[in-house]
Image (tube, rainbow, N blue to C red; front, side, top):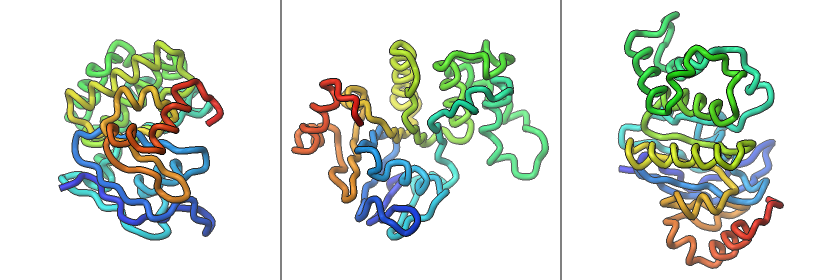
Length: 240
């Protein structure tokens, strides 16, 4: 059974649809890139998948053991978030809050989970450091660790390398790829980086006012829209 199934979605805000008739199915262990022009509905789709905003029409269903609140989320960072005055350990552990219920303290198991995730992502030595003193790449690793404490099944990433230098971008991409390939975490990444999509994705969802493509990367690159969009973006077009 699929982990995520979206059927005939209409998404929008203030009563105005931005994308309609959107259907796609995500299975465990797949790596999806979600692409499209600005204003095509990518951010609205994020809110719908996280149950923060109901679709105007259609259904979003989870399965294969994935609960609706088990989609880990790594959002785009704001300037305010970069200056958050908390320790790395505190931020990572906060990913367990959905599991804590009314308990005022983290359990021993939750603390152990946070430690294991920090070690997996190479940030355990930073545990006591203040988040705002870290580099952009380190901060993204911390937020990724927080998302993994919420779930080890599916991660939704919104332009995770924005603002990072090329080396940090590559390191974060490789880390996410290892989580997918070695840990079996399903990845859904919103991105304009088609070079990365060509390298890492197993599937592509290309959305617009009406869906343009949903399927495997190889089929996408052979489609008319895939050839056009991939060529434009890998030729250095930054007007996205």
